Image 1 (spheres, one colour):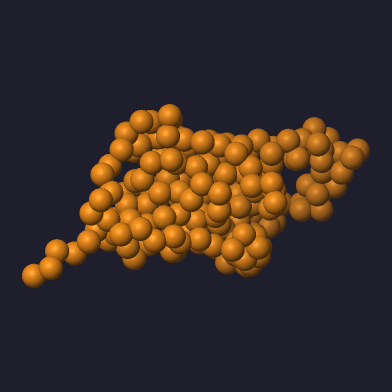
Image 2 (cartoon, rainbow, N blue to C red):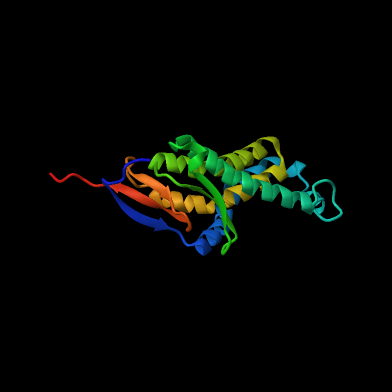
Length: 197
């Protein structure tokens, strides 16, 4: 564990209700960035109505149960990616990682119990959006897979809370430390005391 005597601690949190609203609002830029290029390239070959009809109760293998299973699995993997990413930087590895659910907001979480440098924390916070959201969306645009596009856009949106936390700390000093808040959406920032001249 890093020594924190020379650091000043401040709590930085986000409102969970606002995080959920923000996640919906960012569908607009997500749709513009990924959806527009997809349909410009693939619209002549994609039958959206046929795809959506297959998601119904009497649809093919991609029924509603399958979609629900994929989404739940994706949420679990999202938190697992956080844990793996932060464990790489944490001195105690996975012993410093805790998983759980904030039941009042039905929000799953991954918590790193030891402080990390700002850059390390941001890497761990952004990786689920990259691997489950942005990369699948880009691959979907390249290969014309509408289902993969929806998956990528959903999990980019699902990282809305992560984007908000990253925004809280993105201007902090690289030498500062960040520690997950154990029960709220956010973190503690530990800023080094400046030596008096």
